Length: 450
Image (cartoon, rainbow, N blue to C red):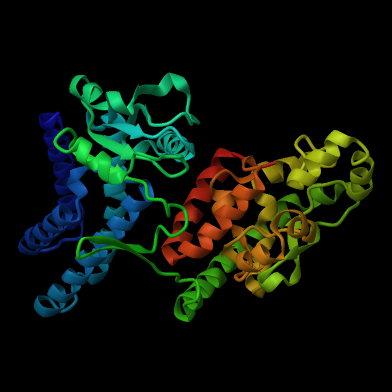
């Protein structure tokens, strides 16, 4: 395994060298400067862990690459200014940008094609909700290179498939002697425990496992902006809410305006392509609907019209059916909705019907990323005004935690609300970028939209 990983590292470094020198040669960079800059680049890659092929998520890899190449570019700019008078600055800006995607492509290529050699065999202690959720995330994030061997049962509570329970906690040490495990994940939250805790598990597993990880009780409340501190033997977790930072909100608004301008340009093209088909039944091009916005103030949201012009009359007729009425008030949507036009179905599945909301963003009524905009009935039935005030202390978004993690597949309102509250507590500009990337992935897969 170590030999294979070393060979893969050599392969990655060789690919970097060949591509790096090829681009420098095309742009006639001096040989001495090429060697010097690659040495700097090589060292930065080592310190930033590019060659470790660690089990990290794609957006964490992107963040690491952005940091690496920002450091590299700053060093090159200073060096170029001192010795060559800004001769190659623009080329190395181009080079840094190219290599961000080059490294991500190659590392993920290696992970995907040599997964069986790089995978980490993990065992999860716990069979509760948290353990089940963690197993679900392992399936979604293949690039993390986790291979779940199974679960260790610690109580009568079992939310995971019984076929995946490999042993009871009392049998764990015997299991580890005969089954090589790289990491053990302790997933205690959501499980009723009396005699078992983190300290006992740590003591029991000392010397039996290479790496032990804990999912803490505060998981899902404050995650991304948290810092861990050892305070003379006590573990302190510091949580910082960035949502109230005026400077960061100013940057977020700039991002909203720039992205909305690009979205409106695409909207103009979509209007030219689809306007005749949308208005074919005699109805308007856009659908305007009242939604709850920042500080619970109502505003009109814009969408391409995807339903027949008499959709409201059809809805009232359908709501006479008890099953349809229950489905509608549970989700405020209907699967296989007969009110949707043929072109409307395509627009929804491709999420193109959302593009007019860029107008709302430019007007300052919405943000690109934020809580899901809801109707007043949802606020009254599912949120309540106290929770509503917490969720909508910021502008609603075209996309957000809910949309980027399943969209209409998430039918539990408690889960939707929890997702929005998580976003507010853990908000950062980087989280917005991650959610945008995840949303694009779901849209391209046409997953969860109806």
